[in-house]
Length: 382
Image (cartoon, rainbow, N blue to C red):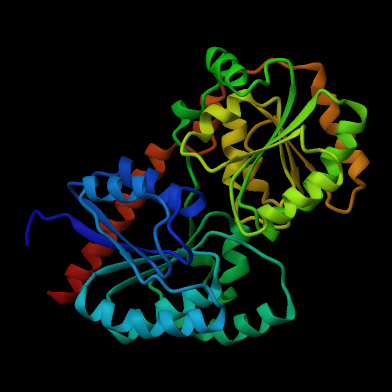
C-alpha cells in the first residue's frame, strides 16, 4: 500500500537482550523516521528483556522468537528448518541480518535468496580468532556470501574483512555503532550521586562493560586488577554484564581474595550512569568488531585502556590507548594506576559527533539506505 512504511526484518544470532547489537538496533529504531521505515525483529533464541519487547511493540514493530536452545550445529540446523516457513508466511522486501556469526549470515542469506526476497543485507558486527574450524566454515560460506546478499554492511573495516569475501570488499558500507551522545555526556552531579549510591565515593573505580564470555577476556582482566589491588587497596573493579562464565569468574575472584574489591553489578539499561562513576575503563577483549563499550567510555570522558585487538576505528579521542595482550599484567596495572592521580573529565560531544558516532546521523544513513533498497525493488517490479 502507498504511504505505508517499509518493513525491515532485523535478524540476530543470539538471545534478544539489552547489549551490543540489539541495543544498537533499538537505538536506531528509536531515532529512525518510523513513518517511513518500521522494524520487526527475529531471534533464533528468545527475548530476555521484557522492557525491550514492550518498546518494540510501542514503536509499531513485532518481535519473533524461535526459542531454539543453543547447541551449535544442531541449533543452526533447526534455525534453517524454521526460517523457511517463517519467511514464506511473512513476506519481507528487506532482510537485515546482523551478526558476526558466519553460519547465521550464510544460512539466512541462502534461505532468503531461495525464497526470492529482493533485498538481503548482511551486516558484520564482529571479528574473531581464525581457528582451523573457522577457516573451514569460511571456505564453505564464501560462495554463498558472494552470490546471495545484495548489500554488505560492517561496523568496522576489520569486521568486514573478517567475514566477507575479498571480491565484495569494495561494496562494504561502514555503519558506525553510534550512541546517544547526550545520554553519555559527562556530568559531575550524576557521578557523585551514583558513586554515593554504590558506596564508592572515596574509591578508585576501574570499570568494564561486557558479557561474561571468552571474547571479553575477564580472566585476564581479573589478573590485571589483582596487580592493581596489590599496589592500591583503595581500588575496586566494577563489572557490568552477565553471561555463561560469570560463576567461574566469581570463583577466580574468591580464590584471589578479591571479593570485597570486585563488584558484579549485573545487567542494566542505565550503563551511561555507571560510566560516570568510573575513574577509568579497561577493555582487554580478545577480539571485537568495533567495541562499542569503548566508544561509550570515551563519550563519558573516561581514560580508556584497550587491547590492541580492538579496531583502530574505536580510537576516536585522545582518551583511548592500546596495549598488547602479550604484555605482562603488571604493565597493564602500571598504566591503570597512572590514572589514579586524577584528570579533568570533559564534555566529549563534539569529538564523538565529528567522528561519526552520533546515533541520529547513523539512523538517517540507514533510513536512506533502506529507502534506496525499496526503490530498487520497486523499479525492478515495474
